[in-house]
Length: 198
Image (cartoon, rainbow, N blue to C red; front, side, top):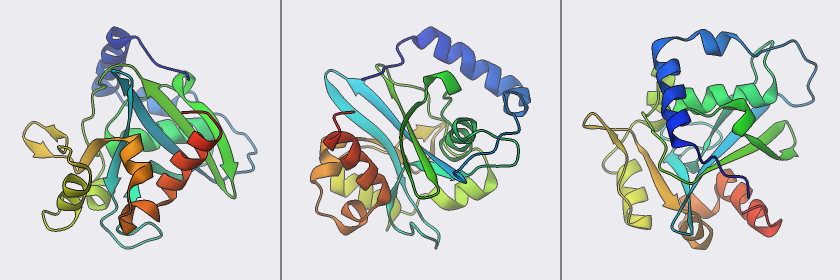
Protein backbone atom coordinates (compact mmCIF):
# COMPACT_ATOMS: atom_id res chain seq x y z
CA UNK A 1 0.00 0.00 0.00
CA UNK A 2 1.40 3.42 -0.96
CA UNK A 3 1.62 5.81 1.99
CA UNK A 4 2.46 9.52 2.14
CA UNK A 5 4.69 9.78 5.19
CA UNK A 6 6.33 13.20 5.26
CA UNK A 7 4.27 15.39 7.55
CA UNK A 8 6.59 18.38 7.45
CA UNK A 9 6.45 18.54 3.67
CA UNK A 10 2.68 18.19 3.79
CA UNK A 11 2.26 21.23 6.01
CA UNK A 12 4.81 23.23 4.04
CA UNK A 13 2.89 22.36 0.89
CA UNK A 14 -0.33 23.43 2.57
CA UNK A 15 1.17 26.85 3.31
CA UNK A 16 2.06 27.22 -0.35
CA UNK A 17 -1.56 26.47 -1.26
CA UNK A 18 -2.82 28.85 1.38
CA UNK A 19 -0.70 31.75 0.15
CA UNK A 20 -1.27 31.48 -3.57
CA UNK A 21 -3.57 29.91 -6.09
CA UNK A 22 -0.85 29.74 -8.72
CA UNK A 23 -0.35 26.02 -8.24
CA UNK A 24 -3.83 25.33 -9.53
CA UNK A 25 -2.99 27.09 -12.78
CA UNK A 26 0.20 25.11 -13.36
CA UNK A 27 0.87 21.43 -13.97
CA UNK A 28 -1.94 21.28 -16.52
CA UNK A 29 -1.61 20.34 -20.13
CA UNK A 30 -3.79 19.81 -23.14
CA UNK A 31 -4.36 16.09 -23.31
CA UNK A 32 -6.93 13.92 -24.98
CA UNK A 33 -8.29 11.71 -22.21
CA UNK A 34 -10.85 8.94 -22.34
CA UNK A 35 -12.48 9.95 -19.07
CA UNK A 36 -14.39 13.11 -18.22
CA UNK A 37 -14.36 12.99 -14.41
CA UNK A 38 -12.04 12.05 -11.56
CA UNK A 39 -12.69 10.87 -8.01
CA UNK A 40 -10.32 10.84 -5.06
CA UNK A 41 -10.47 8.62 -1.98
CA UNK A 42 -8.30 10.12 0.80
CA UNK A 43 -7.20 7.45 3.30
CA UNK A 44 -5.08 7.55 6.44
CA UNK A 45 -3.40 4.69 8.30
CA UNK A 46 -3.34 5.12 12.10
CA UNK A 47 -2.10 2.37 14.45
CA UNK A 48 -2.80 -0.25 11.81
CA UNK A 49 -6.37 0.95 11.16
CA UNK A 50 -7.36 2.49 7.83
CA UNK A 51 -9.71 5.49 7.74
CA UNK A 52 -11.45 7.20 4.81
CA UNK A 53 -12.41 10.87 4.60
CA UNK A 54 -16.11 11.21 3.75
CA UNK A 55 -19.08 13.54 3.80
CA UNK A 56 -22.78 13.15 3.11
CA UNK A 57 -24.05 14.73 -0.07
CA UNK A 58 -26.67 17.24 0.97
CA UNK A 59 -28.12 18.51 -2.31
CA UNK A 60 -30.05 16.66 -4.94
CA UNK A 61 -28.04 14.92 -7.62
CA UNK A 62 -26.64 11.53 -8.49
CA UNK A 63 -25.28 10.87 -4.98
CA UNK A 64 -27.96 12.71 -2.95
CA UNK A 65 -27.97 11.54 0.69
CA UNK A 66 -25.10 9.13 0.00
CA UNK A 67 -21.79 8.80 1.79
CA UNK A 68 -19.26 10.42 -0.55
CA UNK A 69 -15.61 10.96 -1.16
CA UNK A 70 -14.66 13.70 -3.62
CA UNK A 71 -14.55 14.31 -7.33
CA UNK A 72 -15.98 16.00 -10.36
CA UNK A 73 -15.58 16.86 -13.99
CA UNK A 74 -12.21 17.32 -15.64
CA UNK A 75 -11.87 20.93 -16.77
CA UNK A 76 -10.44 21.82 -20.20
CA UNK A 77 -6.66 21.46 -20.19
CA UNK A 78 -6.57 19.34 -17.04
CA UNK A 79 -5.21 15.84 -16.68
CA UNK A 80 -7.43 13.38 -14.80
CA UNK A 81 -5.01 13.24 -11.86
CA UNK A 82 -4.83 17.02 -11.61
CA UNK A 83 -8.62 17.25 -11.64
CA UNK A 84 -8.62 14.89 -8.65
CA UNK A 85 -6.14 17.15 -6.81
CA UNK A 86 -8.30 20.21 -7.49
CA UNK A 87 -11.57 18.54 -6.51
CA UNK A 88 -10.11 17.25 -3.23
CA UNK A 89 -9.02 20.80 -2.40
CA UNK A 90 -12.29 22.43 -3.42
CA UNK A 91 -14.62 19.93 -1.75
CA UNK A 92 -12.61 18.90 1.33
CA UNK A 93 -9.85 21.44 1.82
CA UNK A 94 -7.23 18.69 1.85
CA UNK A 95 -3.94 19.16 0.02
CA UNK A 96 -2.92 16.24 -2.17
CA UNK A 97 -0.06 16.47 -4.63
CA UNK A 98 -0.33 14.85 -8.02
CA UNK A 99 2.63 12.59 -7.36
CA UNK A 100 0.92 11.24 -4.21
CA UNK A 101 -2.24 10.10 -6.00
CA UNK A 102 -2.33 6.49 -7.12
CA UNK A 103 -4.59 5.34 -9.93
CA UNK A 104 -6.98 2.58 -8.93
CA UNK A 105 -9.37 1.97 -11.80
CA UNK A 106 -11.35 3.46 -14.61
CA UNK A 107 -15.10 2.90 -14.56
CA UNK A 108 -17.23 4.34 -17.34
CA UNK A 109 -16.33 8.06 -17.51
CA UNK A 110 -14.57 8.13 -14.11
CA UNK A 111 -10.91 7.76 -13.24
CA UNK A 112 -10.60 6.67 -9.59
CA UNK A 113 -7.57 7.68 -7.52
CA UNK A 114 -6.56 7.23 -3.90
CA UNK A 115 -3.92 8.47 -1.47
CA UNK A 116 -2.90 7.03 1.92
CA UNK A 117 -1.31 9.02 4.75
CA UNK A 118 0.32 7.61 7.88
CA UNK A 119 -0.45 10.76 9.87
CA UNK A 120 -3.46 13.03 10.32
CA UNK A 121 -3.44 15.44 7.35
CA UNK A 122 -4.90 18.90 7.69
CA UNK A 123 -8.54 19.10 6.51
CA UNK A 124 -9.90 22.63 6.20
CA UNK A 125 -13.32 21.79 4.79
CA UNK A 126 -14.79 22.88 1.47
CA UNK A 127 -13.19 25.96 -0.04
CA UNK A 128 -15.79 26.95 -2.59
CA UNK A 129 -19.35 28.18 -2.33
CA UNK A 130 -20.82 25.21 -4.19
CA UNK A 131 -18.82 22.78 -2.10
CA UNK A 132 -20.32 24.20 1.08
CA UNK A 133 -23.71 23.49 -0.43
CA UNK A 134 -22.73 19.89 -1.15
CA UNK A 135 -21.31 19.16 2.30
CA UNK A 136 -23.13 21.74 4.43
CA UNK A 137 -23.76 20.23 7.87
CA UNK A 138 -27.37 19.48 8.76
CA UNK A 139 -27.92 18.38 12.38
CA UNK A 140 -30.91 16.22 11.47
CA UNK A 141 -29.40 14.55 8.44
CA UNK A 142 -25.72 14.89 7.63
CA UNK A 143 -23.85 14.97 10.91
CA UNK A 144 -26.36 12.94 12.83
CA UNK A 145 -26.30 10.12 10.32
CA UNK A 146 -22.50 9.91 10.07
CA UNK A 147 -21.93 10.33 13.80
CA UNK A 148 -24.68 7.90 14.75
CA UNK A 149 -23.77 5.24 12.20
CA UNK A 150 -20.02 5.24 12.81
CA UNK A 151 -19.55 6.75 16.27
CA UNK A 152 -17.05 9.32 15.01
CA UNK A 153 -16.66 13.07 15.48
CA UNK A 154 -17.04 15.49 12.61
CA UNK A 155 -14.00 17.57 11.65
CA UNK A 156 -14.11 21.20 12.80
CA UNK A 157 -12.05 24.08 11.47
CA UNK A 158 -11.91 27.21 13.64
CA UNK A 159 -15.06 26.05 15.41
CA UNK A 160 -16.96 25.46 12.17
CA UNK A 161 -18.24 21.99 11.42
CA UNK A 162 -16.94 21.02 7.98
CA UNK A 163 -19.50 18.24 7.45
CA UNK A 164 -16.61 15.80 6.93
CA UNK A 165 -15.27 12.94 9.04
CA UNK A 166 -12.58 10.25 9.09
CA UNK A 167 -14.42 6.91 9.26
CA UNK A 168 -12.83 3.45 9.64
CA UNK A 169 -12.87 1.70 6.26
CA UNK A 170 -14.02 -1.55 7.89
CA UNK A 171 -16.99 0.26 9.42
CA UNK A 172 -17.99 1.59 6.00
CA UNK A 173 -17.69 -1.83 4.38
CA UNK A 174 -19.63 -3.54 7.18
CA UNK A 175 -22.41 -0.96 7.42
CA UNK A 176 -25.98 -1.95 6.62
CA UNK A 177 -27.20 1.64 6.47
CA UNK A 178 -28.75 2.42 3.10
CA UNK A 179 -26.90 5.74 2.70
CA UNK A 180 -23.63 3.83 3.08
CA UNK A 181 -24.06 0.47 1.36
CA UNK A 182 -25.64 2.00 -1.77
CA UNK A 183 -22.96 4.68 -2.10
CA UNK A 184 -20.66 4.61 -5.15
CA UNK A 185 -17.80 5.54 -2.79
CA UNK A 186 -18.48 2.40 -0.75
CA UNK A 187 -18.41 0.38 -3.95
CA UNK A 188 -14.99 1.82 -4.80
CA UNK A 189 -13.69 0.90 -1.33
CA UNK A 190 -15.10 -2.61 -1.68
CA UNK A 191 -13.41 -3.04 -5.04
CA UNK A 192 -10.13 -1.78 -3.56
CA UNK A 193 -10.42 -4.32 -0.73
CA UNK A 194 -11.34 -7.18 -3.07
CA UNK A 195 -8.36 -6.40 -5.31
CA UNK A 196 -5.94 -6.21 -2.36
CA UNK A 197 -5.21 -2.50 -2.75
CA UNK A 198 -6.24 -1.76 0.85
